[in-house]
Image 1 (cartoon, protein in one colour):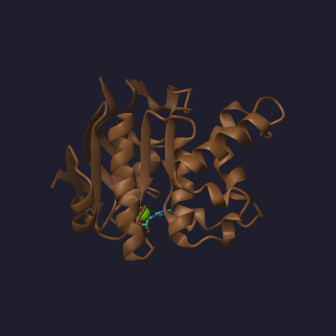
Image 2: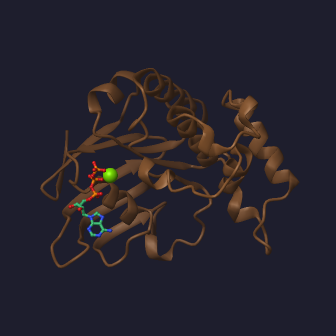
Length: 223
Ligand SMILES: Nc1ncnc2c1ncn2[C@@H]1O[C@H](COP(=O)(O)OP(=O)(O)OP(=O)(O)O)[C@@H](O)[C@H]1O
Ligand SMILES: [Mg+2]
């Protein structure tokens, strides 16, 4: 069974289509990269796949289930493009930030409990970020914020990890370290990965992919 199955997808924010005739599939444990120019529709495609944007035509299935009918999103982790991440205006520590990855388990009152903080701390330590547990998220460098965000994505043991431009806006050394870490995690945990990046050369140097797609003029093809 494919983890992701998109077939003949068409979507537009207005009557004009941003994506048309888009088909792709990602198998269990596979890694897939989507590339393309700025504004080509990469983030839009991820948001449609994750059920964040409705009003498309065609087929979008996750784990064999049409996205509109999928109820349990807890095993799907999404690391949005940095501009979304940076909107974290409220003061929050790294531990709180990572515990948000367990939101589905917060219960009726929707606040994290001690066991959530404990798991968040353990996840941060595992990622080599133990010393930042109580550091305000906003005070970290872009590269460290990115590692905290992937920590948050992984804390709930996802089966599918979706990342939108995870290497954007950080220095080269952080990019290389981040991609190496991602490849290692993917390998160790056999997580299915869908990664969007316009820095294909760099990403390919540090990660291996089962499939690479390019979005161009609304359509998609294997690169
Ligand atoms: N919320 C929105 N409302 C209307 N149009 C949008 C919206 N978000 C994106 N668009 C448009 O849809 C097109 C695709 O945008 P999208 O963000 O998916 O591109 P992208 O490939 O992710 O670009 P980038 O490389 O800059 O991240 C662009 O023309 C963009 O202006
Ligand atoms: Mg984008």
